[in-house]
Length: 603
Image 1: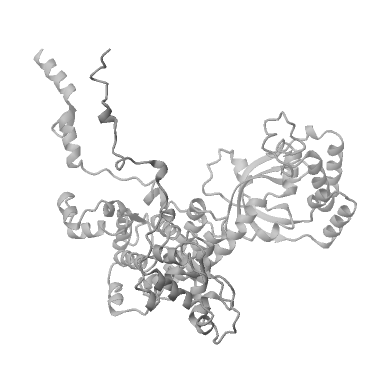
Image 2: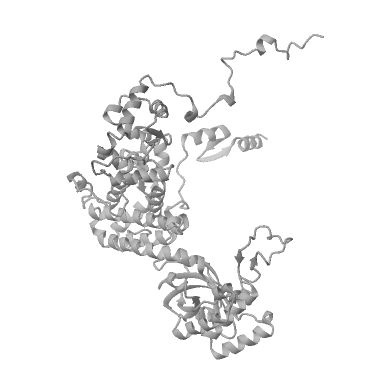
């Protein structure tokens, strides 16, 4: 039977040259590949062993600074290859292979070697330690993902200093120049003189966008030159130059500020307010875009702003706003303290007493309790609750915490009512008010001596360590109503509006261990509930804000959500229109509709 000529392959065609065959299994990583023996291996071995020998090392203060007094700490091989007598020996991989056969030194990894045995002879010199370099080497060894460049000074360090001003720099910020031009130039020069890693760059970019700048990265990355922008986009010399700046002030801001200069009586949509911008950015945009729970991230965020304000002050970029810049600088100090406290408070609040009230009186915590003992094997959540987990409060724990709080801080009437419904039927106790409200902390009061003694007596009768941990002394958060700027408007009758706006203060019980992380001026967006006995508690917390919280509509006006007026159609748009339709008397009519209208007229 003959084979199909369309599908058969001859033996000659199937045969492949062994040299052309590629085997995936034969591939090895570069670090494991065989290195050709170095032609001067004996010289390399002799020279390196001499550096680490008992004859040389005790008298080499420079090398001892890296090997340590016993001579056995790892040393970077690249540093050894930079010695005068070693520069002739390359490549590094071949030198490393030679040293693997040494009886004096051993190869630690691809980048480090060390002496095999400690020194036995006394040192002849004091080791010369380059502390900065030693710290860098230790950091690099502990963090393999870092590079030397990543450890270099960025210019954002708290102790970073600005170089002396040159005549050229002074001329850039002549007070006679328009403020917009000066601030754009300052941003460009500030960014060029700083080494910005990814997180620093993101913070600075978010800050500029929030403050009315736009990012021209798309134009820069497109590779278009100034001449191409002028020719293809029809831009002037000044417009093309502005497009090639990485950051520039948005047109909306330029128009608003320019109009305010022309007519001072006119209310401008934008104003220059460095302090207000610092408050708005650090209290909203920064908290939403970055992990303010991370103390290091908060420090980076505030330091980026401090460094920028310091640059503007020292270079006299806008002396007419120096007072605002100093105030904005101070806001960074406040933010660094308050955001760190806010991160802890956000995890702890509303606290055990408020959670106990919520659990007992049909609040958001009711039915939330889960632990490794309450979850049966057939429960849906039985698989992910592990031994030692404890979510929410059990009914028993909630009763203990609530009873202790009322006994220590409640009135006699509240204590009697609480005792009654705890014994009888707590299921039928209803809240008389349930209100979403904003609160501002006016003062913080620690527990008095009488309350502390009462809690000590209660804990002395407990044998369960967990129950003792639950029963903690409490202090007070004294709060006043605060209008949440981002809250939806409330549709209330006039008498209810008058009641909510009367400015009545409220007092909430908070555990003593949580109070140090609260502060005067802290703002809380929450839900508050109250019983007919006057017992009031914070049921849920939606958001916490620092004392300097300021809501600005910047992002809606000049950020990502800003409306952009569509411009005239570009050339490629016109070509597409011509393919699909016709332009008649300024209106675009599709080809199909135009044919139908022609037929109608013909008929």
